Image (cartoon, rainbow over all chains, first blue to last red; front, top):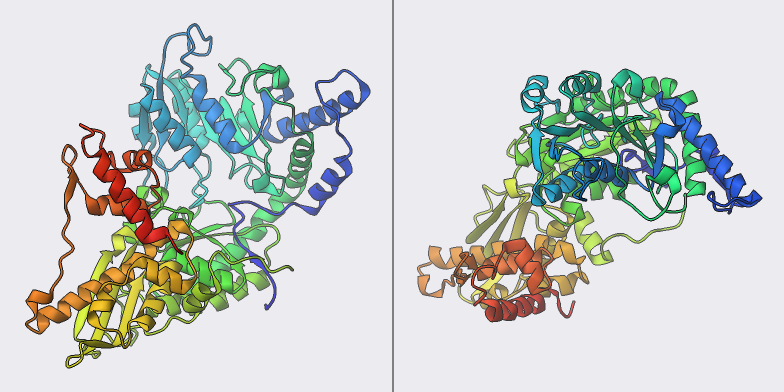
Length: 396
Length: 203
């Protein structure tokens, strides 16, 4: 497949869906400030409110429970800050409850915010995960007490794709009187998500993971759930998030959600078939590999695999030279040598984390591309293993 | 489709795509000196093996293997070419900066990946001296404690610089150096400038 770029990093971000692109181009002329009373302003306002309804209906919420934000990270930061607001007399934290429970495999935007809150004196507890990346419900039951203010557990993991049983988790948490948030950025639009069925208080979703634009996300806040804005100084989003709305981004998110509601089901089946073929191709053609993540409770397009003795960043860059874009769980490429905290949390050794790559398939990937990947990978892994100090297995 | 810039220079790319002098025959290679550094757990490991013309004290061949990223592969590949025909002393004194110059520069945050090769080479040269009864030639890279309150060594400061520390404040953030009595601040600042110059200037 020479000259073609094969993009298999859809958990990092996705290309715009052509329909999203068209909707956004059509909306480029909508410049009014949605807060303005005049006609251009009302035009923009109307577009934003239509999207709010679409998003709400897609996740089973009512429109006034949906708030737009600039990113999934911002939405997650907002939720974590709600119960720990240190402002005197803040209604969101009337009883001074300041204990948060989260997991060891969250996105850095949750983990780093948690660490920051810890420094401010908030007690933060971390749930462990098993070898597949699933949390232990019994440990959750032990940890959630009347001191617990908020529990935050991601619905689907970005690195290994493992899907948590959010419904059961939320039930345990809410039974004990605490609030529950799920970062569903990797889940919404890929698998069915309904806030009523899941029984959550807060839920984060994002546009650019589902063929929408970057810079737009939404936060579901259950009616009556405590709230405290992270960004202050404006009445936008009913006082929950100051700043002029990103109308164009909102239009893109709306179209992305609309398209997902039509395509998601068929897409899920197709991606599962592609992933199964890819997994089989790897198993049959490359020795000493290990798949990371849950074998069934996993995002349809996500495959995390570790190649014994082959360093992850080298794999990524050799594949890049072959026209294939995937990513590494290890953070070496981003400036640190720390192995993936997610893979370490599953109990796999650091060597395994340094040797893993994440392949995340999306709507544009074809079986032909998967076959090209299966043709290319064994060569790349073989080349790296030939010069590896860590690949002990002798070929013949 | 327009060509986008690769994250590395053409020289890095070339050495990454076609790495030179890989030690594929470790058992039968019969090296005169061998050095191993790093470890797989930490994400990178390097083996460098050399053959030496004992009369002239010149490296005649150099081979290597690594568990490492693109920068480690490319920089060790270029190093293995550079040292052939080089006097042991000169090879011993090669720094990451010399290698980076040959490669046309690496992204700053990748420089620490590239020091593995020359470190393993120095260990290999010392190993050669040891094997040949020239213990007096062995140079030790001894660590020295700089911050007495927190037991922080000059090597730790060097590693922090390689990992991106550029100011005294960065160093404090990364290693807690000088957060005790603060007496070492002047020396640490001097070391910081020296390591910045050693690894990052002129590239």
